[in-house]
Structures are given as C-alpha cells and as structure tokens.
Image (tube, rainbow, N blue to C red; front, top):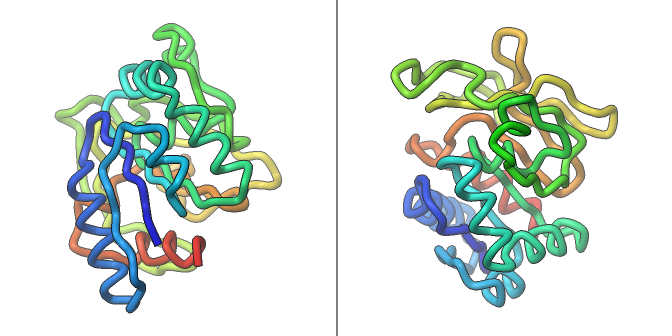
Amino acid sequence: MRVAVIAVQGAVSEHVEAVERAMERMGVDGRAIATLKPEEVRESDAIILPGGESTTIGKLIWKNGIAEEIIRAANDGRPVMGTCAGCILMAKHGDEQIERTGTRLLGLMNIWVKRNAFGRQRESFQTMLKIKHIGDFEGVFIRAPAILKAGEEVEVLSTLEEYIVGAKQNNMLALAFHPELTGDTRIHEYFIRMAL
C-alpha cells in the first residue's frame, strides 16, 4: 500500500512518519511518500493533504496538476485526508476570508469552512477531543480552521465549542487539527483502514 503526502508545505515529514508508524503497528506492508508529482499521486492508494497556508497550497496543487489527481482519487473511492489547511481545501464552501484570498477549493466535501476560526498563530493550543471511532485524542490546533456546517451526508466525528473539527464523507476525512504532531497514530490507522 502506498500513501501520498502532498509535499507543498506543513508537517509533511511528520505525516510520512505517522503513516509508517501506523502501518507498522497494524502489520500493513506499505510506505508513505512525500510528493509533488501528479503521477505519484495517481498511483497511490490514499492521499494526505497536510496543513500550511491554504491559499499557497491551493495555488500550487492546481498549478502542478495535483488537484485534479486528488479529485480523481476521491471520486474513485480512494481515501483522502485533509488536515488544517487541507481541511479547508477539501471543502465545497468557504467563508468570506477564503473568497477574499481567491483560494480555489477542491470542492470534495459538503462542508462550510472558516479560516483561522480559533485565532492567529499565537492563539495555537492543544486540547483533548472526543473523536467518533477513535475515542479521546489530543488535538493540536495551529491557526486552525473550523467547519461551520456539514451537509446531511457528512458524518460529524468531533466538535469543539460551537465548531465541527472532524468530519467524514464517504472515503474523505477533514480535520481542523494536526494529528501528525502527536505520538498517537490512531487517526492515521483509521485512515489506513479506509484504504484496505
């Protein structure tokens, strides 16, 4: 099994390590690759779109032909997970800040997202979340977005305050936080099981 981690910016190496640790724990034969090559994304069994700055990531994945490969993979039923900025890009609907910056979304999940919902970089924090199918999990929020609303086909996995911070739609996961920045691989294991 091969998991592609889109290597524009963000905690790319941390996602690669988390996937490989998760595979090892599960006894799954496979590897994760950090890539910006459309053909490597095309040949992968699952895709992770990490955090960073959503406008920049969006521009680069559309420019490099990676966006189309992510959309094709999602439509083919391959698992796609977006964390933080990746969560924003997975959405069909963005807030006025997303519109103002001209961020082009992938339009995959029927969710409404808000950029920087929890404040700027200095307001970053960690908190325990209850996540459906996972249990208690420490969420790391860095300039985090939030999901304001989810369509009825979307399963809400976790909430914080008035916001949705984890959601699943068929083969797609959108997380407002960074699971790769903890030593806990359970979310990556859950994601890998979606591909098996």
